[in-house]
Each structure stands twice: as structure tokens, then as C-alpha cells.
Image 1 (cartoon, rainbow, N blue to C red):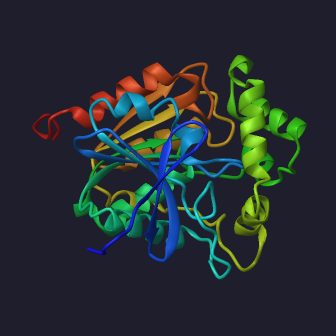
Image 2: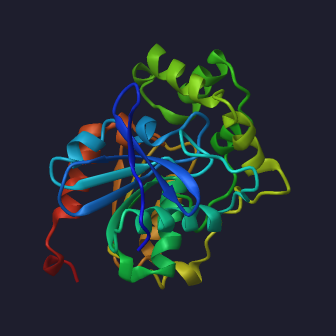
Amino acid sequence: MSTTTVTDEVTDEAAGRTVDAGGIPTHYHDLGSGDPVLLLHGSGPGVSAWANWRLTIPVLAQRFRVIAPDIVGFGHTGRPADIHYSLATWIDHTWALLDALELERVSVVGNSLGGRIALGMASQHPERLDRMVLMGVPGVGMTPTEGLRALREYEPSLENMRRLLLDCFAVDPAIITDDLVRIRHEASVAPGAFEAYRDMFYSPRHAGSQLAIEADEVVTITTPTLLVHGREDKVVPVEVAWNMARLLPDADLAVFARCGHWTQIERPDDFSEIVRHFLARPSATRS
């Protein structure tokens, strides 16, 4: 294991830390105690660990040690000039973080891109994952959607951010508050943030949009898995979750009605409860 120096810092909403993970200054939140649970955020503009998981972290931290990093290219984590954004890079960065924190084995909760990273981790080193929760994850049968296209074509402005969140993420417009719009917009225009976001999905130097997974790989992933999906998800259709539930050897599926791509924000109590129960369930009760 690597020797690390961890420094404390404070964000607007939670205590955060920074650690060197494979040469990348990596910002993360670390709360609670108990079995470690890694929360991996998605890839929308202005995303960060706290933006994705601010309602989930305090609930899970009552029972687990919760680690929620900003994946390289997002949030407050460094953006090396020579980085090649790709699924492999994001997976390697996540392993490097776990090694830096001296965590041999964790459970992973992944939202969208974060869930795809989790699938790659389970394929590479299943012995290091206890369980997975995959929320709105792209998978077998995924095709480009209007929601995904809108995410990738986002141009920074307060009004564009408001329209993106209303049109693509939420069924209930009441959750799209002025504060949420402002926070996400400000994060999307932080120094280097928008340039990195556009490059990782559009520049020929990068491969951020290449997230496909084949059925032949999925059927080999034996990590006990809970799939969580919003029935009205406009970014990743719920049919993708059904495909993955059929293919993964050990997977449960929960579909939330009146819910889009943000189950952890639109249905926070239900999401946290089902995830907490799944992660805490004794292994002997699962086949």
C-alpha cells in the first residue's frame, strides 16, 4: 500500500479531504465508520460527489464508512494536462484512491457513469468488491437518448442549467431549486471544468463516451448487485436495467415510479433505505 498525506479542507456543505491517488490530487468526503462503502457520482455538467450524494452520505454514514470522491475530471479533483479521459482511466483512478486509503475491499454505489466504473471494477478484481448498487447505469441495450445528448451538448448558463435539470433529471420540478441550479452552474464554469467536460466526450484525444459493455462480460460479473432505476429516466431508459437484471448472475432490481435519473435525489428516503438494507444484509442470506 502507498503512504499518503491527507489534508483536511472544508467545502460549502461538508468537510472534505484531498489525497494523492496515482499522482492525481483527489478530493473526497470520508464520513462515518464501519464497513467501507464507495460512492461514485455520474458525469453531468457541474457534477461532484457532494452534488450527487449530499442526501445519501449522512444516512449511510450512520452505519458505514462512506467515501465519496470527485472522479478525475470532475469536482475539486485535479485535472492533469496530460490525462486521457476514458473508462480505463476512471477505473484506474478509483483503484488508486482505494490503494491510497489502504482499502482492500469495499462495496460500491455508482450513479450512471459511476455505476459503469463499478461494473469495470467488478470485472477486473471481483475479490475487492463486496457488493454493488448500480443506479441509472448504462448497460446492455443502451442507445443514445435525447437526455444523454442534452447532457453532452450543454452550454454553460444559469438558464441552460435550469432547463437541463428540469428536462432531463427530474419528474418533480419542485426539486430543481434556485440554489441547486446556481450550485451546479457555478461548478460547471469553475476553472477548467467546462473545458474538461467537453473534451472528455468530444475530443479525439479522449474516450469518455465509450462506455459500452457487452452481454458476454456482464454474465461473468458475480458481485451481488442491486440495480436501482427511475421508471421515467430520460438519460438511461429503464429497459436497460431490465436487461442487466436478466444478465447479471446475482442481481435484484428496484424500479421507482414517478422518478427520473436521480433516484437518490427524487426519492432520497426510499433510495437510502433500500441501499442501506441491501448493504447490511448478511451474506449468508444471499445465494
